[in-house]
Amino acid sequence: MTRTLQEEIRQTKPFPSRTAEALLSILRTATVLEHEQNEALRPHGITHTQYNVLRILQGAGKDGLCGREIAERLISKVPDVSRLLDRMDDMELVSRLRDAADRRHVTARITPKGRRLLTQATPDLESIERKRCRHLDPRAVASLVSTLAEIREPA
Image 1 (spheres, rainbow, N blue to C red):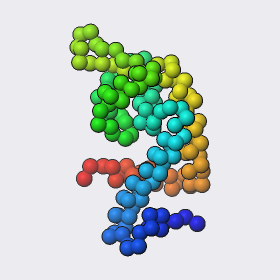
Image 2: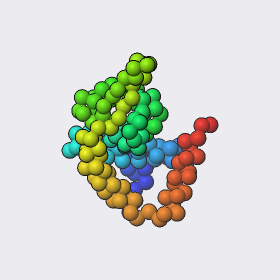
Image 3: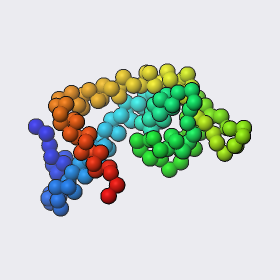
Image 4: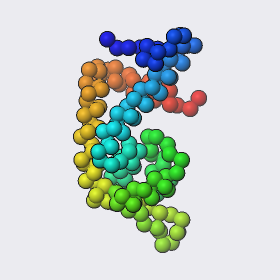
């Protein structure tokens, strides 16, 4: 039987409201999923954020993207995308090229090594998705996606 959030976090007092419980449940779920994904990615030597960057750059194709564009597309916001890209460049997962006309503009692209790592790591994350969501009704999933989009809308 599925435990309630209150049982899971061993909270003895009721939540102040159902919406407070719902929002905390979203945060708890995101934390659980992120931890599980990071554990699955650990053997590949990357974090979920680095995996996200590789997916973004793979989608960008040969044109690549600048750091600002990558930052806008990340699932989890990071304070310093430049340092994140520095680490990934050191790992040879991405390459960066400074624009000759505008030295401030640096374009990042996924490397062949980054593509290989993405190909190797993706099945591990897909396995988590299947394990966590296989029992969900497709209509419930569609409703969840729609509801979460509404919550993310600016107030």
